[in-house]
Image (cartoon, rainbow, N blue to C red):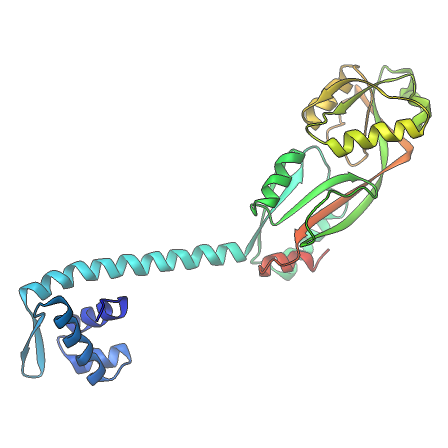
Length: 294
């Protein structure tokens, strides 16, 4: 016979009650089964744990030692189990969403968030911003339940079949240019109108797909873009625009272009999607609650 958690609990309860029948009632087991378990424990350990005293049982010195040690051990185990259950409950009652840096989610997101609070008030939503590589790496590692990103229209990120992509909004592309640029007064632009401009772009390491798409779009418009700087983040990209280094192509849902030195001018031939991704096989009720409002 091996010493199991059940055997330990049986022993501790008999020691507390000092009566096998009373302990059996508290443990919801039959008295003969409990007596057999205690006898088997004594044989396994080769130690007498109780002395019988009429209707009662008294701990031996060895029994007192085991009672003291096992009571503490079982209490720690019970606390650990409770904490693990709380952690699991928190996990299934919360979602973490990674959001692309620099991107505005004002269109529709606040209304959806209020609807979630109305339907599922116990769901905790954690939001984090990160660069493109960072949010994808964390999503693929399971650290994010959802990610929200901006992508060229009809050019989604390549993901496993187990992931779901949903377009929340499609917006116009814009040319971000310095306010001193002669084109700053235009109400709209097309790519051919930018053929003489210098460009700043997100680096190939940051967004190889985006970098390639911009170059190909310019080529389709009849020119090779002159990219003078590659930025490692959207914040840095906007800094280059602000300093007049060149023009940038991006979605109009950009929350960083609030400086008076920057103009966002609609580009009639470029469009961007605001897309959300999640795992189709997620078992989390909180994830399903979010999906239900999209």
